[in-house]
Image (cartoon, rainbow, N blue to C red; front, side, top):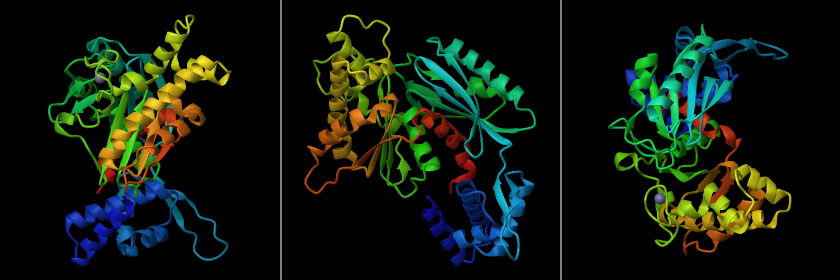
Length: 393
Ligand SMILES: [Zn+2]
């Protein structure tokens, strides 16, 4: 993203640009550099952006006035001028919401992506009740952060969200049908609300916080109750018609397979999700009532061979389905998000072998990596979702 932005700034400048567009672009470049390199001096901003010192000074002055950027502390150099470092104002905060089929997490983060607080609640299957509870929680957090400026609410959803109709259109594991989530929350709180599919939110988190700016073709796979994919192709998020792109989890691998939450049979996710591994284990083991996926991982680590077999089978199917993605999109990298990343030693090699086995002539197998600091990927994505309108060119 950074190099792309710099190209733009150079182009605009070479056109003799003092236009508003160029000013706006330069401002975002400066904001982004402060975000990713803070604490940073004005001199380093000029060097890294290629912009003139006087331009940097003007932009920084404006950003300080608008309360986006704070000065200090002063740098410690042995001799000469002591540069004043700049950083984003952490009094500007974002409320991030991660809605999952069983549990919803509401968190408060600052503009630097640091989480200040977190609350969790069960996700009601009744959307009206769930929204009421969520609104109450957001209001509670609002009251607790007096003096800070709330930039907005970012929400990650376990389903597809249609940005044109403002509706959740497909969420088979959540069972909410055709629901407007944005307007009730925006009306009740007066805050701006941004919504995104969970896997897309994870793509934003990777690009925004993990500095994957240079990776133009990226797939993020969320593996939990279901399987979702977020697709970045040629540097752009792929949403598709009605926001439905990326539902590889519902491509059937076996039309005679088990019934899926979407109504079809034998979808990829019924063979490769956390639920699938639990089902494999139940089929081989009578005493497993109330077992969760993390329990299954732990049993495998303690030498339960049936648990190991169930997880190996899940890993095999993950790799098998990934071939579809690799053949169709040729990503440079696939980032996997989910509880399974805690046992990556168990999954990684099986998945890689399954993908490697069928790389097309002329193709290159992508890097398959677990998400960094996985538990927060969706929430970090919601922070990026709210902030990106101020930062992206
Ligand atoms: Zn399905």
